[in-house]
Image 1: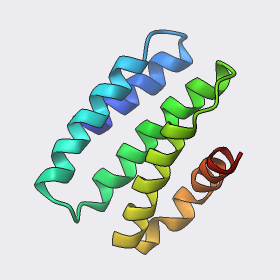
Image 2: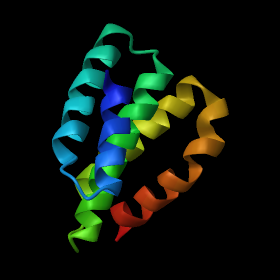
Image 3: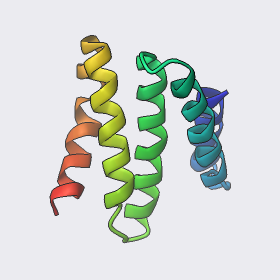
Length: 103
């Protein structure tokens, strides 16, 4: 369900519709998936994507998304640790998060 909510949120965002609650619900769904299997790299990846999208919203509102970026970075790092082949797909988001965490 988490990935479905992220996809719906992405579509709603593009259509300028409410999407933040979907992202927050996706995080809750993915929390449960991770709690059920701490080695689920896919769940870590997509929870990071949800956090990253929340960070983008905050940045677009001219706010510093430090906490969202920390959460996304943590999840991306764990996903890559569990499945190193994910690194190329997550590299750009990781770098963006690192910039906000440093600044």
